Length: 263
Length: 259
Ligand SMILES: Nc1ncnc2c1ncn2[C@@H]1O[C@H](COP(=O)(O)OP(=O)(O)O)[C@@H](O)[C@H]1O
Ligand SMILES: [Mg+2]
Image (cartoon, rainbow over the protein chains, first blue to last red):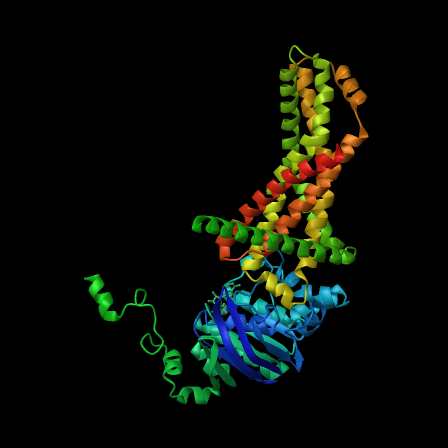
């Protein structure tokens, strides 16, 4: 459904993605993992055509979006919903206005029909009573759920989730995981989830890809991930400070060093 | 030799940056002009911005107007001492208000009120990914955010300037009448006999250009913001400085054409 071919993207001559190749299958939940700053959000923005790659191509249902003009790309984007890392709700609007906006812009539906749809989507994420609140009045978990509900308003085929559980308490994280699974199972939504929350990976993933140093280092099922022998992948999924991935020693002290400092 | 090369390198880099930034701003203007075709459909957005930029700026404009008028009358009287009779203070002050002080001071004050606040608002939308969210919802941020602000600022600025002009005239009248003891009749007859419609129109034309410049700079700088809350702060200051400088530069250029 989505194909990434030799994607390459640098910022200020610092390579972020060097050569990313991947196929995202219809109807599946594909989870992309990797350390903070490895380019996961950049990858999602490339898929949406929000930024252009330096080299390589992105195909959505066989159509290359990297060379498209604005009009065409806006048409393709209507297939997509996106949950941003901090939800990216419009501060100046209420929850209802946030959610109604895409329909007001892209459809001729009368406002009471739109209102009904807002209510329906809010119920799907378990928040039927927040429509008149402003984003500033919501907690982190509530914002993400409103962000999810907004992403659903145009009834997308594909939803991208940027770190949906980061910064949430474990219970709320699980609520979000269940919503992601629900969207996939009940609505048949193709999902791409970016995360470094391993609990979430094992719970929701049909397939996992790990990005490290700008390339796809691992690509397979969660079971294969658990069994992999690659030391770099193992260090990440087990969450170890020591290993082949070196962390700046000035910031990360070993326990012994910390004890010495305290004395 | 190395030194010269170094200096040239810096100048060259700055020049390139200036050219690319002006280029970027022109692209923004071009795209905004194209989205004018949505003006009717998006009238609600435009009206909202007109209220925000126009009506909410009124208290500031009144304050600026009254003091501008008062101080220019007082200083004109000082300069006229022993050279011209005080009955000339009214006409002289009104002229300088209509052609220069009304538009320029109003625009300069609104460079902060409008230009900087546009940059701050769009900048914080940029760094919190709200602009990306609009793009993702297939809503063009230039049409949805920039066009209404530019249209509103460009149309409201002349209206605010007319308002400021009359408030300033009133401020001048207060000083001339109450402190310099020139009668109301002398003042208004003087103003009337030297009044030229061309002065007011050229002032309004200036205001139109200033309104466009300020809002375009605010939008462009806002959209360019990066680097979190700190970046928003930088953009806000930059928009204020750039708008003010552009207003003064444009004022000079327009003066060459108009007078
Ligand atoms: N607009 C940008 N300008 C400069 N650097 C950027 C920009 N966007 C991302 N980067 C850089 O790209 C790298 C990857 O960023 P990102 O995709 O946000 O990481 P993450 O995997 O945590 O989502 C980071 O080092 C970041 O500094
Ligand atoms: Mg990220």
